[in-house]
Image (tube, rainbow, N blue to C red; front, top):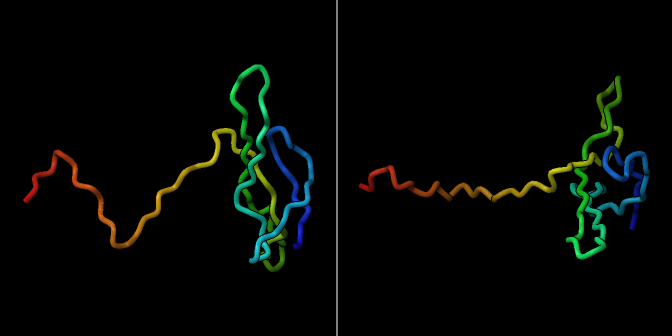
Length: 96
């Protein structure tokens, strides 16, 4: 498998460059999570990083590569929105 040296910004890995395995599309994963075991009975800590474009070329506007940016609030959870789904009716709306 191919890997790409990807820099990290912010958080405990700030300034480091780590080799990240690329997926079948040739891109690194969108999220990179670093689990850190805790001591003294505390719960383990999970540091999360989100993949962002590192920059673009001036002349053609091509993307130069990827960088992982630290997200202190953690990974955002998304719900799938299917086109055939409709919002649930609330109690304030009359059924009719």
